[in-house]
Length: 43
Image 1 (cartoon, rainbow, N blue to C red):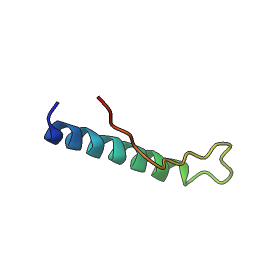
Image 2: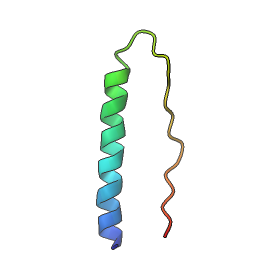
Image 3: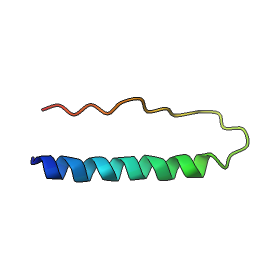
Image 4: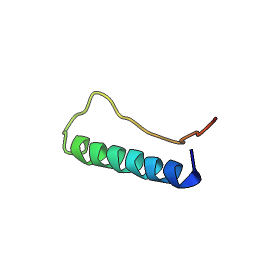
């Protein structure tokens, strides 16, 4: 896997979770909060 492919996948994952966060921010009293503090890439 090239570094470009990793970068593209990482951008997709970040965009996905950002969109998910925008959806769940609209909830008035969510039962669960998700906080991502790091993304680890290993081979």
